[in-house]
Image (tube, rainbow, N blue to C red; front, side, top):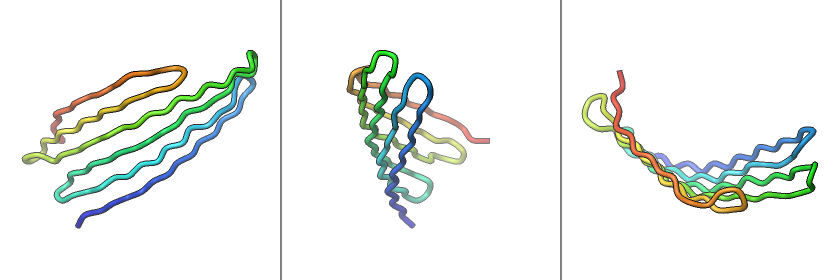
Length: 99
């Protein structure tokens, strides 16, 4: 059975020093036996009260998870970030064994 999921999340915060929110929209597709692909878009925005400054950051991300032979798996992630605090790419690759 193939499973597709669409997920939206929102988290807000407020404290004595800052306030802001983090939103994410994620689309994922599962495949048998245990493979998964995912793409996501996110935004992190906040305001620093002491200097009355607003900051906005965004990212797009692609993830994959592949179940290999027996207990072995491969996963990888590629992310591109842009905004006022961070700009650039981040990625990781992982080969693992589940006990």
